[in-house]
Image (cartoon, rainbow, N blue to C red; front, side, top):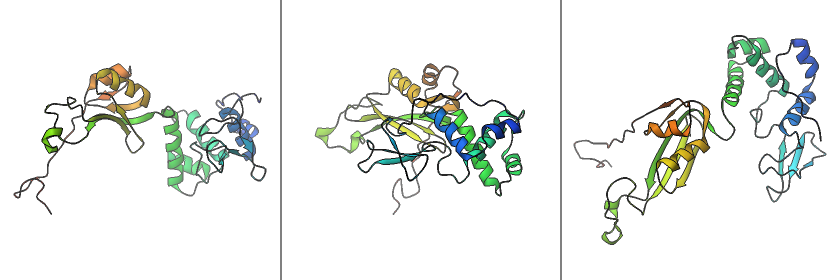
Length: 251
């Protein structure tokens, strides 16, 4: 079992070049930091993976897929699906974290010699998001809300009506709670109800403590679910299109 290397702190240019002289050194450092107890499948966590002789730094897991799931050291990371080498990624992250006042994407573009501002901005954005968010939890600006799925009681046959009024009183409907990150992922879950205990547990499991702020109609639930979470209340606006023909009369 390989010993896990220590995290990198502030380095001079000479120290950085000594620690990461080439791309294979960066790959070895990433693998050792990511899998200190041996390489595991990023999908299922299976430790029984084997190297691919034809492709270095690639492994295959037979448990995930019938034909095997092939993955590399950057699978499931911010480095995946990018054309920039790991050494550039490491250098950009080091510059952003060790600069006294931080570095803008324009400064990164000039320093690294990138030909496009969009490339530098994309790298900086991914690094900032990775530092801000917990893995598998929503960060940034998060909106939380709940709904009941199952149709309106007035549209059912008489023998199928619940003959109840008000939110949550219709037992024929299914309660769903969801959380969405602005311009990001969505997490939705079927729950037994929208009471305080259920919604609070959902927020704790899905929303990171490092959010910019969270939006929810019932502000007290957010404060009880996450201490110190910046929360705001929002009012959902449901509007019915109307004209002189009446609502929903358009062809």
